[in-house]
Length: 439
Image (cartoon, rainbow, N blue to C red; front, side, top):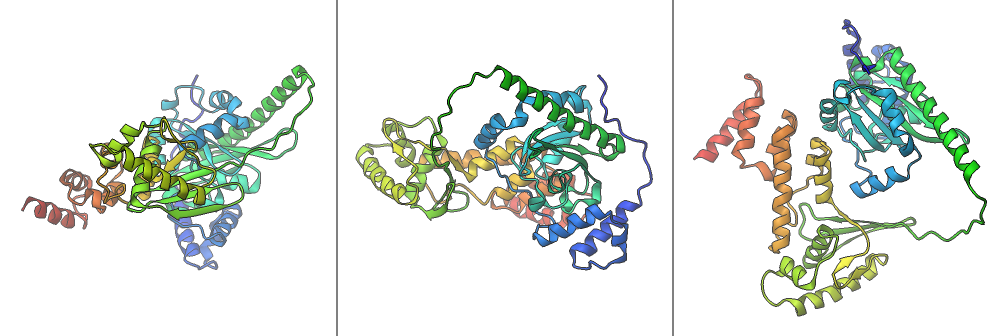
């Protein structure tokens, strides 16, 4: 089946530069600039909400869902059962020939699925358009997914109309999906690409897809109700949902952040406890006392030392994270612990190179000499380097070259030099750095 996203005939688009200038004036505080009259009212109102919400004009969207939470949220979301329908309606042919990315998000604007043309997905991932990222208006300003959710109706945003400058090379059309009975917003469907995704036909197709999804949800619900036997409902008190994050990038004394349904707390843990928690977070299946001792202390009989440290760590967790239990035989924590280092690796897997680099605050526990930490530290740094060498854009590579991880990496510096235009003023600095490495 052919793709509905064949590019439109090229047209002169002088309006884009007008909108760009109007955007620059608006975000600079000049809301009375005459060029704003050329900006559509729906866009102007969204820009104002973005300004009022203190949205960064070049801010990357926050990654709101870790890999584990994303998987659980996808599985439980009402739109999970209609994803095949969405794919068939929006990209009926070969996705890699479509030239667009389709995204499906929840009612909060968090993207749950991003599919479609691989090249488009790689390019848009660089601005944080990846599963798990928050694309609400509150997070990234004017965009089709976030603005459609804010208004409760379909929206088209063309290039420079986006509030965030990083998103302005793209255009998008999105429509919210409502619960067919309560009319509560369940999520949003979005198409992102070039000018072909903001035609009137594109809006009709996205709207029709949202309505078809709502109809299928209603039919599925009716079928389930007709076949369900009546049984007494037993209500039980749900346990408090707890998320635990360990921050180890660029710091020797890690931070443990515990977020529950009612509260959140952040506490610093000792260097040794950080090493133990990181090893348990990295080996979720658990570790024997002998193996954990090797990873933390190295060779030698460390059983007694480790046992004493575990006792102290349990007391610390009882105070700052009472919902966590550190179990023995094997040693493991009964709560998933997400580390900021694993988040960087997850972003790299999703192709979000720019977001991953922004999240990389430095080496993992840089002063630690624990063998397991040293190995993990090297693997994170290598994964970041290899991913950026393979697929990152020039501006991301240049930003990476300014970090400690790449300050003396001649291959990164030479690649940046090859990619820079011949007359770029940045070439001189790179040449000087390379010459200093050769000395």
